[in-house]
Amino acid sequence: MIPYHVIRRKRDGIELSVEELKGFFTAFAEGRLPEYQMAAFLMATCFRGLTPVELRTLVDLIINSGVRLDFSEIEGPKIDKHSTGGVGDKVSLVLAPLVASLGVTVPMMSGRGLGHSGGTVDKLESIPGFNVQPGLDAFRQQLERIGCALITQTDQITPLDKKLYALRDVSGTVESIPLIASSIMSKKIAEGIDGLVLDVKRGNGAFLPELDQSLTLAQTMISIGEMYGKQTVALLTAMDRPLGHAVGNAIEVEESIHVLRGEGPSDLKEVTVALAVEMLLLAGWADARQARADLEGALADGRAATKFQQIIEAQGGNPAVVDDPALLPQAQVRHVLEAKADGWIEAMDVRAIGDAAVQLGAGRATLDAVIDHSVGFLITAKTGDRIVRGQPIASVFATDESSAALAIEALHAAITVSDETPAPPLPLVSHRVTAEGIEELA
Image (cartoon, rainbow, N blue to C red; front, side, top):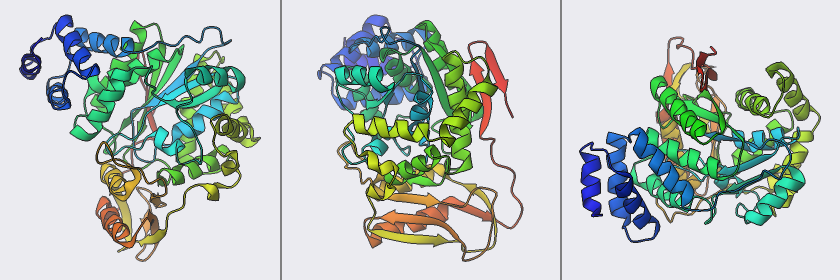
């Protein structure tokens, strides 16, 4: 196998053989192929895609690069959820303990930030002491004991994807249906689940913003799940504005805690409950109405918040943050962003907002960048809102005045104000996709 021959063939749209792909990716996994050649291959894939045979081969290679977990000895179905990524998307922090509080086992393996999109693992690490790599034995024991664990990829599970994920984050090769699908589904198949609910984002803050792209991605991931015998369903959700108000790490954890207490932004709760309903249906609930009622009950009576405390404590974190979010990292500099004119918020450039959060330090611009868990935004205004000049519409949390000033400028540029009433934003949950087809919900 000559690496540049493989890169050139992919660049020219020629289907690669199983042997070529196996040789190329195995060499990368073993450190015999440099990152610049893999980056070139990933960029070629962004333009040329992968054939069904190439995609299945890549998924197999990623899964078989590490161990494949088996939780069959744990009673009941094991159900997980995964998002394709967005800005302010802290759904997993609410959904995992919420569903687990109703007796469903949730083995959730999440990722770090990718491009402009925040990562669940980075958010969890803003909780003092929280260990996202407890080890596979501890992972299993925690699932048996409390029914939920929130971990990141380990060196044992899909290590090939871990290397590819980090490289895609900084090489401009995130926006690819087969690369997104293979990364997500390989991890989920390897983690020993029975069913999976996918949160596929659409809108200008999604990696694939157009509706047809989102539907194709959902169908691709569902087809992979079906190949491996995993029940898989997807919901298409809006990412043409940040989800909830908080964009950052610690402030997103705090907002998640409010929702777990039965408070918090209504849009975050709506999306979370919709996805949780699908998880309960996969776990055997008879109908969506009963599932929704049970979820609302767990939020209202404190069971969901208590489960989050149990998860935090089990993974070495300080469970007191659920009662006192002020224990989370706090930014040194805070500024309020005021509207510059009267009008309606016509649109938000969500990707630009995510990029601004990365520049603040909430994400990684380079492989070795260190996350600042305290920084971010609290955007209280929503697309379609009527605003007046001088009205507070957001807050900026930063480490110093210079980065705060840049963030304020970026936020103003990302929020479009119009004199006329704007068109309505995308519906929060618009489509349901299964192996049987596509159902439009709104």
